Image 1 (tube, rainbow, N blue to C red):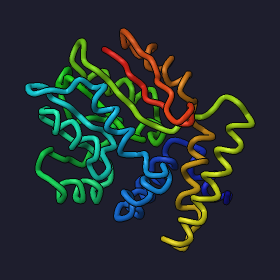
Image 2 (image 1 turned 120 degrees about the vertical axis):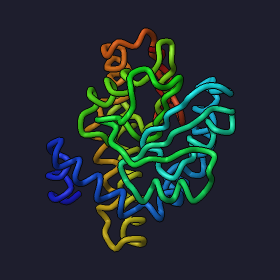
Image 3 (image 1 turned 45 degrees about the vertical axis):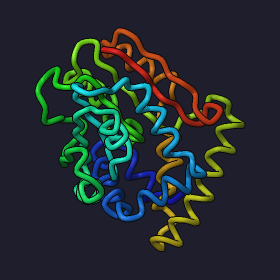
Image 4 (image 1 turned 180 degrees about the vertical axis):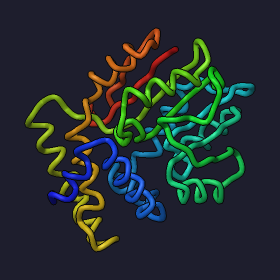
Amino acid sequence: MTSRLRAALAAPDSKSRYVRRLFSTIAERYDLITRLLSCGQDRRWKARLAALSGARPGMRALDLACGTGDIAFALAGRGARVVGLDITHRMVQLAGAKSNAARFVTGDMLALPFARESFDVITTGYGLRNVPDLPLAIAEMRRVLKRDGVLLSLDFNRPSNPVVRGVYLAYLTGVGSALGFLLHRDPDTYRYIPESIRRYPGAIEVNDMIRRAGFSRSEYLPVLGGLMAIHHAHR
């Protein structure tokens, strides 16, 4: 892990700049990387998240950090009217080129361009770990979610067991370094993932943060033996 990457993630402003550059760089290969790092399980996890949402015709859904649109399209397939938002404009372009089943916009999770209580469902895949201000992101999601609305988040977990955590991060570092060098000639490109997990509070603390933000109910569901997690909360 280079000092450059550590320094970039040390403060909110520098993390924000780094994440913007990183996802612009990897946008064209985003689908490939998510499939490889999840051993092909990524779509199954996202389908489970969409099913938990209860999305149905007549509902409005917002998918944050939408990437190339997998979750947004899954929600649209259940009949919801969906907006996908991502801070990386190229991701939004790629998602829109796949299908017109959802509407995609470029925007920031920390300053959502929507009125209060606009959506019945809010989802995000790998979004919370990447924001520079996690409490603010959760507060913004609560602001635009309707009363009794549902929030769902899929992300890597930070295992509490130090041995499991060490093996997990070593695997992601090794695979990420190889992929970064092969695809971008920069091993740090995907070393960002394990480094961001090291700095992430983990599923238990994130669940507490969601509750403290004013959600009436919140739980997390372990995925892949707890190496991943789905947060499921109600406003």
